[in-house]
Image (cartoon, rainbow over all chains, first blue to last red; front, side):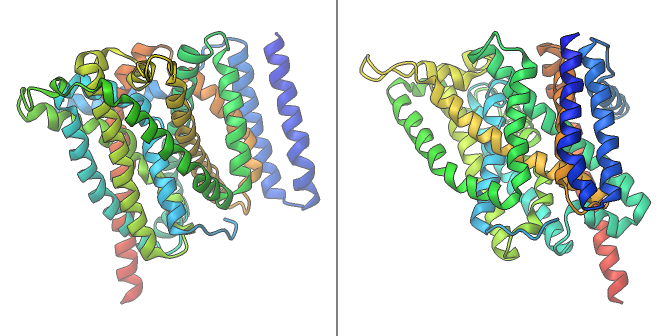
Amino acid sequence: MWATIAVIAVSILIFFLEFPRLKRKKKTKEMWWFSTLLLIATTVSVLESRNVQLPNPLDYIQSFYTTIHSWIGL
Amino acid sequence: MDNQTISARQYMFLVIFFIIGSSILIVPTPLAAQGKQDAWMSVILSILFGVVLVMFLNKIGSLSSGKTFVQAAIFVFGNWAGRLFCIFYLSFLYILASLVLRNIGDFMTTQIIPETPLQFTHTLFLLVIIGGTYLGIEAIARSSEIFMPWMVILLIFLTISMMPQINVDQLKPILGNGVLPVINSSSIVIGTPLLEMAALLMIFPYVKEERKAKHAWILGTIIGGGVLFLITTLCLLVLGSDLTALNAYPTYRIGQKINIAGFLEGLEIIIAIIWMLTIFFKLIILYYATSVGIAQFLTMKDHRPLLLPLGMGMVVLSIIAYPDVAYFETFVGEVWLSYSLTHGLILPAILMIGLLIKKRVSGS
């Protein structure tokens, strides 16, 4: 529980650290990308802090290259 | 990105740190397991390969004329195909950065601070990295100039203090198992630091004089490879190939064996300092390359707003990446070479072909 609260607190902190600066300079595109990335990162961190089994990109890489290896007979 | 330049010498230091960082930690064990007492020869083979690879990367650097890898890819392949191309490259950098972060975290939790959870070690280390990346490539390069003498002094000290324990018989019989294991095990050093150097194509355009930068890159590769050679040879000479292959961190183990006249002991933290310095620079280069790359991918003018969200994601990725040590060993042993070969050699090769065609077309 505390981990989740801490993660959300950190993302709110990051948001208020960067967002006003971007808004002052009226960088609309930067504001959107920053918010999107922060939202993704927060979602992933919250899921991780709730002990949800997240998909591991290394699994996909591994299965991809094992297939390739079996094709060329390694 | 921002109008910053670094000198060729600073670039050479960054290359040296990039090669030593994290490979000094994880390379001697698999080398000794596969190459046995001849592992030192396979490092030399890998350095030769590295020099050829750097010449090839240099060629791309001069062909793309002041553009980073991402900018050059978008320039050559157009908005959509170029972006698809960059997704592979950037995901490689991001995953590599989180694996490097995991290396230092694993080392800290198993050897130095066993009761601190992995998340906190990673977060603290990454905060420093983000701070450095925020300041830009000039500050990173200048700090590499400050820390390089320290690393050299510590390495010399380590080598000298290991001298009394060296046993040359550990290297015999030379080529006892034939040449094949030497050639096979040279792929370890090729895969772990050398093919990852494609990341440096994101920094290469910032170096002031291109011709000097090329020399600096080759020289840095040779020096960095030389340090890896020195460390591997020291491990073999002091521990022997069997013990080196059994230890998770053989370089740390030889540090524990330092004993100067019976009163100066427990100097293994010197090695830990070398590691932290080099891994810091490797990670900061990778993190800078990733964040600048993503900023250029999204056509943003500044990479700084992306740093903190990317860092949050990286801490999570570095924790879920390896469930256990066995997974790490199979991944690094079986998959890593092909993975880094596709992203560190084949992707740049495709880019180079594209650049050459583009040049031919626009020239005629």
